[in-house]
Image (cartoon, rainbow, N blue to C red):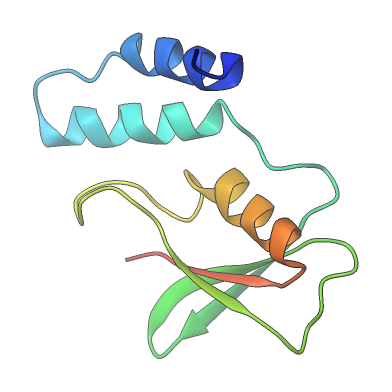
Amino acid sequence: MANKEIEAINEAWLKVPFGDTLAEWRVAFEGFGAMFPPAADVEFEPVEAGGVPGEWSITPGADRGRAILYFHGGGYCMGSTKSHRHLASEIGRSANAPVLSLDY
C-alpha cells in the first residue's frame, strides 16, 4: 500500500487547476509548491552564481564545509527556487549540508 503522505500529495496534485496555456501552468505549479512551505527554522540567503540567480537554504547545524547543488524540476519551462524550497531544504537537512538552488 502507498504511503498516506504520498497519497495526499497525489490527491492535491490532481486538484491543481492547470489551465490551457503555459502561463497558466506556471502559475498553478508555483501555487502547488506554495502548499508545502519550508520549515520555520530554515535560513534562506539569496545569491547570484555566475550570473544565475539562486538561493542557499541552510538548516540548523548544517556543515558549511559541504554543499548540495539542487536543480528544481519543471521541464525547463516552469518551477523555481520558491516552488521547490521545501524539498531542497529538507534534502539539505537530511544530508546535514547547505543547498544551493538555482533559478533557471
